[in-house]
Image (tube, rainbow, N blue to C red; front, side):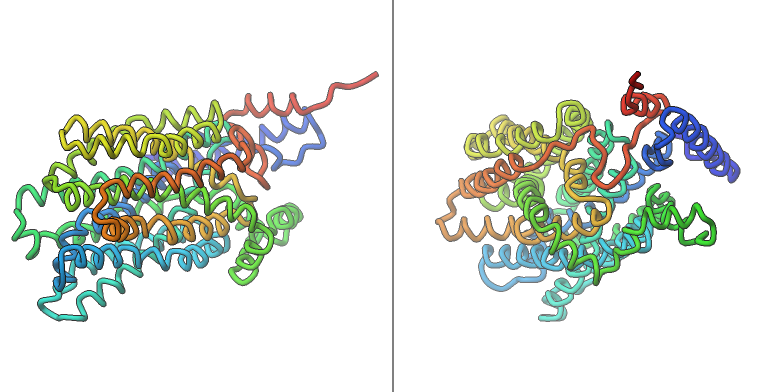
Length: 510
């Protein structure tokens, strides 16, 4: 994808897009004089692809940092919580994992409205910096044997920094891509956001697997566990560079132009048109979201809660389940999970195309119903112990999960209107993740301990979440191939725009 190798290239691109927009407005007004210039947005695919790539790769950096903790949970429990039994140590480690999710709603409530006031690009860069610093600092904390109580206290502090920054990540990145993508390809482009998540998780699992294989248990416990966290510093700089290079979405650019050139008549008109963006100050927007959007907010929380329980159960908890509960070799569990995630990445964009063509609801329903029906058979296969059986069980779970992964990033932003989209999605998403997603490893571990190490507990817990998800999907509206609420139609080409205008223009009557 061309990004412009010289300083003149971006200026030439901007001039070409400007001429393109002017030409389109002239064509549009000849077809229908009543159309305003913002009634249809024509996207530039090169710009959309650059924006999607940068958002997805930045997201991969974020989830690499977050995934490291999941795959080192057993080792971290021994380093920072050495007292008590292995179960107590693991529970303490997962409790610290869950702590980061407790502040995610606060991060969402702060970064969501902030992103609508100062820009998506700046907020996404800020969350990248905070996540990288928090992860790097975890790798520098002395062990419990060295400084005692202060060791787990510092771990909790930096996990809070990670959680707060992640609160602004998904809502910002998904809003960014959704506002850029044309209506008929929103599922396809949105699927690359989750591709970034899987790349981050895969990178984290791969590095942990490599270290476990080459260093051994003693070296990993003494110092090897620190290496993945220390890598976060350089990776954070890469992610920050990518996000600084992002362009703002067209809606926010128009808003900025209206305030910069408020003296002109066209700017006054644009400012009136996008005045909803200027109202996104936290004090106004948070109360407005809960007062006006509460039914949709509840729907969002139900969808995201069910989705994240399944997601964290498979991608975060499963390696620990295979190692600690079923007593697999740690490297075997990570290898199987790596294979599952690579397979998911291979079909993710195809799922995005399918939900663009057939709708978001059929794909989401297939994923939720799949977890409800296949959870028990999947865990029975995993329980058998042979490599083919374990791979078969993971494949069934992965097939259900990929239907959700490839669809959610397009479905969730469409739930809310433009004027409250970033803030509403950030709050709803992070409330659900905080209450249900991040607590999944802790809750499953505690339930298994309470029910005498019943290895089928994860299946039952996932089925309960999937049932809620089925009800939520049944209640949502279909949004595929439709404009985002509060936004004009968005098309990929001028020809598609002219066709749309022609179809909306009433035939003259005599």
